[in-house]
Amino acid sequence: MYFSKHNQKIVYINHYSGLLEVEGSGPLCREDAEVWPKPTENLAREYHTLSIREGITEVGEGFLDAFPYLDVLILSCSVRSVALTPEALRNLKKRRVLIRGEYDTFAERFAEENKLDFLHSDIPLAAYDIEAAHEHDIVTLRFHEDGPPDIHFNCFTPGSSAGNYGGGEYSKKLTKNFYIGCSAESFAESFSDRAREQILANAMLKRFLENSNRRHSTKKAGKRQTKTGTEKGE
Image 1: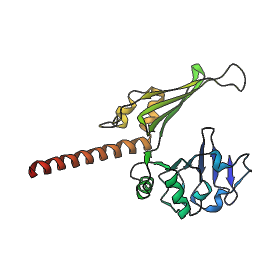
Image 2: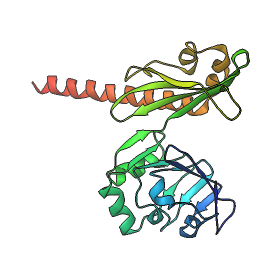
Image 3: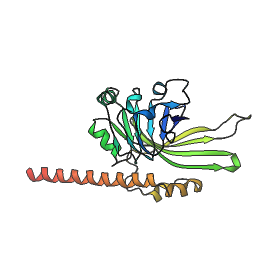
Image 4: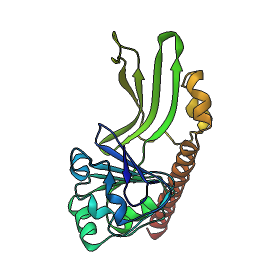
C-alpha cells in the first residue's frame, strides 16, 4: 500500500496480478502520482492495470503521464472527467489501452471519444465463508475481450502449516448474451444460499442487466426498422 505525498487521503493498493487501485475522494492531480513509502520498483513499470475506484471524481491533467506503461485503465462510475496531455493521449492510443467501466457512464464515452476499445468491468458478486470447510470464497462475474463471460470462483482454505494457504480457482462459462431477459432474481437462482442474498442486493449487477437488456432491445428495434425500410424500398 502506498500514499500520495500530496494528499494522504489518496491511497494506492497494489496487487500481485499487476493491478494498482487508486482509492480516495475528489479529484486526482499530477502531484498525487508521487507516493510514499518509496516503492521497491517503479510503480509505472510494475503495474499495467490502473483502477480508479469509486469516490474519485476527476483525473487531472498530468496524472496519467506518470503511468506510460498502462495496458488497462478502469474508471469507476464516480469519475466524471479525465484530462489528458497530448503526450498521454498519444501513449494511450499507441499502446491501445483498454478502457473498462460500466455501460452508459463516462468511461464508455471516454473510450468512444478517443477511439479506444471498451470492455465492461468485472462485477464482484459475493464473498462468503463455508465454516465446515474453513473456506472463504470470492465470486466474480468476469468479461473478456477474446471470449465469453464467466463466473469465477476463488476459494481460500487453510494450508498444512501456519502461513500456508490452499484452495483453488475455477470458472463457469456463460453464453455471450446470457443477460437477455435475465433479472437479478433469475441470475441468482443458480447460486447457493450463501451467495444469493448478496447477488440480489448487488447494485452494479442490476445496472448491468438493465442497461444490457435496454441496449439489446434498442439494437433489435433498429434492425427491424432497417429491414422494414429495405423491404419498402424493394
